[in-house]
Length: 322
Image 1 (tube, rainbow, N blue to C red):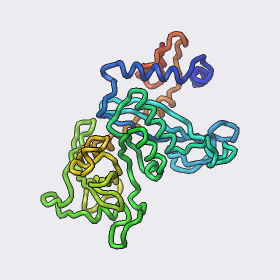
Image 2: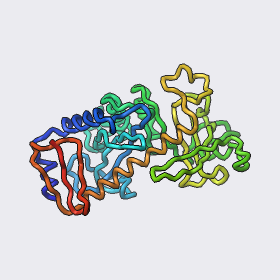
Image 3: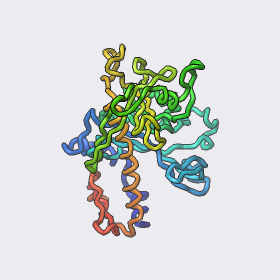
Image 4: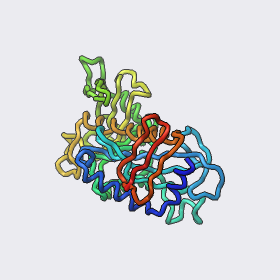
């Protein structure tokens, strides 16, 4: 692994040029070429790092470890359609204490701001998508929504179930209250809910239930919808219920004909957010590679920025770039 570290940190290459070439090859290859039916998934990944001298280090939430600690967090984007997936861009987050004026410094960027910029960069690089998808960590940033709108990107983002919003006293104030206000009796009399089939990579199919809910400014006839998807509308189980905000218009919304984004039914909203776990899969694969014990590195002159081959015994791996 020391040889790999030296190769990555000391080789005479420009990382951005290598990544641009990798993305170019992905666009040109028919089996990996992007299309407008995929998604750009936003996430961030943190690694623990001691000390204070290293750039980007700070005490912050490290999602991979599930705690606040000293480390480095990198914001990432992945393109996927459920058939193929690959990383697009990455940008380390620099905590505010690294800047002279802290969070008010003009150069400081929050993680949502970095994420929105990376999503726009992916679009500019030719990786079109139906929507940008993210978890609830990004749903609380007005800057994130604004940047995506300015880039002409649709989004499907998770909301925290108990995050409150302004509403009349007799109306729901949180996403979970909005979901509980929907009518449901049973599968034969679903009320406000619509059955949606989810198809998984291993071939199995699950029936979920989805509905448009109303909460404050959210609604099926509003510019931003609240879509709830769950395996059980009666119980709304925590680990099998999604509360999703999206600017993809409802097919019957009055602004559907003038929206910059084509309408999306409930099944499509669920499908799009269901692609988000692919970024977790990419993290798992990289973690597996980190555990490999040796590396075979070819000369820089032979590098070709497309292939990453893993040894069959999981004891070696080879970087094959040209």
